[in-house]
Image 1 (cartoon, rainbow, N blue to C red):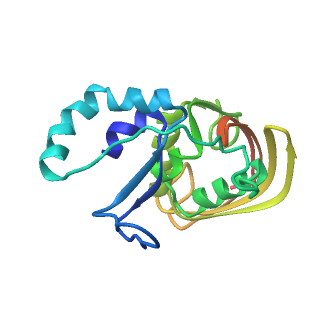
Image 2 (image 1 turned 30 degrees about the vertical axis):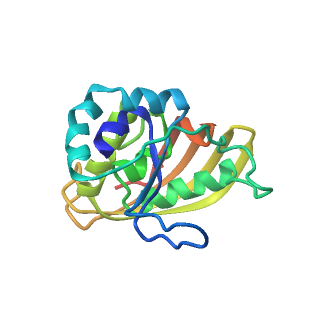
Length: 213
């Protein structure tokens, strides 16, 4: 089912059968909560041909009830508890990249229409422009190119929907890259600018300054 909902910019909030009943009848089976950008997006997913194709399989293998409920925007407060700030989300995003996040684990940080622009640098002389699909593909390639990567945030500046990060990056190559053999060390000093919309990255610009190799 994740494959059918991914095009609609979904995010799994709950997906577990480990349920503690505190009052009333205990729940049977498991509970799944999926967040969409809007109730309309949730309905589009439910009515999509992709979901319709697997719906008979789900209905024949399990009994379930499906609801669409209006939620609370990520930027709002829930019961007086502040939701993560854009700065905190930016730090979480960088940690996810450092830990090798790909696929859905990385896609959850982006809007469906995210635009990513890499300025020209030693590794990419002509720069690059990516959408969500290309960004996820690049993350998969990165896991094959480097056996280890670390990101150190040296400065962070938040202004409304914008977050600016100054970072030091260190990587150890897993395969030959340009004139570097495997197990070579690479270092980069980067500035990344993130524009958030409803708790997700809608635009990313990054400038890289690699140390000579």
